[in-house]
Image 1 (tube, rainbow over the protein chains, first blue to last red):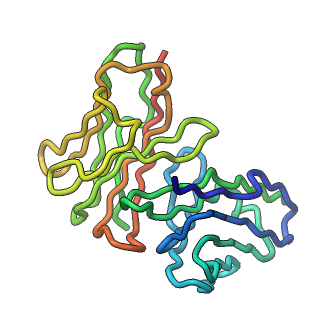
Image 2: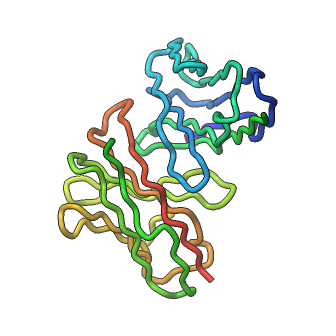
Length: 110
Length: 115
C-alpha cells in the first residue's frame, strides 16, 4: 500500500519565522503535488514536482522532490499570517488515483 | 478562472435516507473525481469517471454509492442509504488530462451530516 506521511501534523509559529514541512513515503512516486486547503474550501494545487532532486520556488515557498522520489519538502521563508492553512502532499498511486498525506495544519500568528 | 461548482454546500440528512451531491466540473475537462474528507482525517479517493463510466473506485465506494453524468454538465454522487459514518466533506474534482502531474481542480465541497 502506498502511503504518504506528513510531519509535523501541526505547526504554530510567529510571523517572520521559517518552517519546513515534510512528506515521506517508503514507495517511489512518479510525481508529488502540494496543495493548500483553507477552511470551507477544497484543496488548491500549489506545485507539482516530477524529477528526482527537483526544486521549485513559488515566491516564499520552496518545494523539493527527493532524489529517490520517495519524499518531498515544503519550506516557507518569513511566514506570514496569510500562509495559515492546511498543507497537503499528494501523489499518483499505482492505479492513477491521487493519494493524499494527512496534512500539516499551519498557523502563523501576527 | 474556471472553477468546479458543488451544491449544496451543506446537507443534513437522516440515517437511511438517500442523498445526491451535485457537481459542475470545468467545461472542457474530461476526467471527474469524488473524494471525501472525514473531519480530522485524510482526503480519501472515492471514484474516478471518464468517458461516461467509472474508471476506478476505492473500497469505500460500495454498492450504496453511485455516480452519474446525466446531462453532459452535471456530475452527481448518490448515496442510497446513508450511514452515520458517511458524514464527511465530499469534494468533486475534474482534470483535463490523466497523466503524471495532471492538475486536479477541486470544488469547495459539500459538508454532509448524517444524523
